[in-house]
Amino acid sequence: MRNQSTENKVASNIANEQEFESKTQQKQAAERLKKLGLALVDLTKGEREKMPLDDELLGIIELATKINRKKDGFRRQLQLIGKKLRARDVAPIEDSLQRLRTSHSDANRHFHNLERLRDDIVAKGNDGINDAVAEYPQLERQKLRQLLRLVQKQEKENKPPAAAREIFQYLKQEIPER
Image (cartoon, rainbow, N blue to C red; front, side):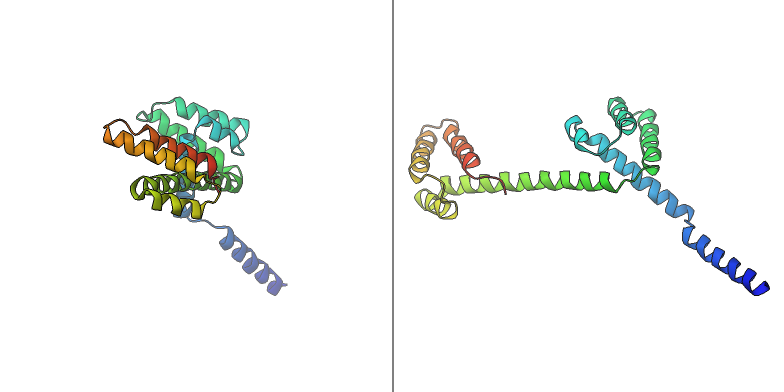
């Protein structure tokens, strides 16, 4: 019997050690959840609505957006958000936030590629147009040449680059985001 009792104690000690979380670990987890809460507060209202948040959490997050960030009340509101997050499964929220951040970076990358393509067309002229049409066959060579002539004319007359903006809008319309 003593042997079984000792084995039970050892088993319970092992279970307690596995469940034990040091105070440092608890503080790190709380800080991580506060940062997640701050990221949620920094989202726009439309972005927050896309997140898997319940009404209670959404309400306290929206209240935090109304509080002046320099005041102590904002800090306390972030702590409350962290406390509410501890009682929930935050994995879906973190996944949703990551997808949102990824979509923003993809959109920025696409925007910069279009700007680079426009700048190449303006700088290289017909060679730039040929490169663009080779890369994106759906582009109309004649329309790009027409806009390029307009850009060159505006540059000679020191006018604002309206035609360069038109090239960008045309490229944006014709080249979908991947």
